[in-house]
Image (cartoon, rainbow, N blue to C red):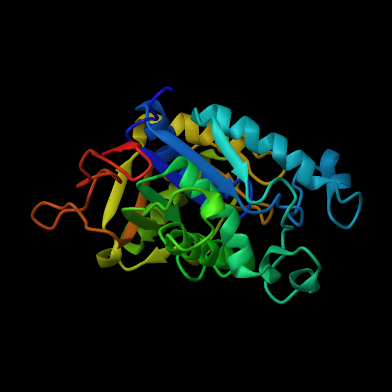
Length: 307
C-alpha cells in the first residue's frame, strides 16, 4: 500500500469557481510541492448567471443545464492547478445551488441552504476520515459575502471537523480524525484598498471599463485578523488559467477579471487566511507563510503518517 503524502490539505467551497478565485494560487503551490490537495464543492452552481451569450440557454430559467457545464469547467480548472482529488459533497447534484439570499430558490427541495446540517456534514466527515487532512480551509461565518451556500458551506465544514474527531459518531464512516489547523479565507483591507488604487491605472490597458468596489471582494477584514499569507506569485498564471476555465462565470484579462456584473477586480496572487483553530507558528509576530507551519510528523490512529 502506497503511503499518502505527508501534507494533506482539504478545501470546502460552495460552487465551482469559488476555489479558483479564493485559493487558486494556494492550491497550485501545494499540489506542485507534492501535498495532497482535496477539494469538496457543495453544489453544481446551477443558479449562476451565464456570461457567454452562446451559452445563455444553459441558465436555470431556460434549459436548467448549467450544473453539467460547470462540472466540466471545474475539472478543467483543477487540471490547470494540478489538483487531482476534487469531489462534490454527497456526490454530484446531491445539493442544489440555493441562489442569492432571500430568493425562492433558498427553500426549494434539495437546496443546499435548507439541507439538514448534520446530514450534510456526515458526507464531509466521510471525506475527512478517508483523506485525514491536517489543514482545512473554508469561509468565515458570513461566507465571505453573505451568499446562503457560502454560509452553509462554512457551517458544514466546521460541523464536520467536530464530528470527524468524535469516536462515537458514525463508525461506519471511518476512524476518527482531528484536523490540526482550520483557516478561513480572508483579504486584508489595506492590501485590497491598495490593489484597487493600482487598478485605476490598469483599467486603461484593459478591455474592462468599470471597477468593482473594495466591498465586492469576499472576506475583506481588518489587517490584524490575518494570521497567514501564501505567496502564490509563481503560480499566478495557473490561477488565471483556472479562473478562465470557469468560462460561464468569469471573464479573465490578466491581471484583472470580471464576473457577470462586468465590474473589474484584480487577481490576487498572494492569498490570505485567518487561523481559527490550531496554533499559529509565527516569529516576531510576523504572519505564517505556510498553512502547515508548526505541524510535526506523527502517525495517527489509522496508521497514516502526518507532519
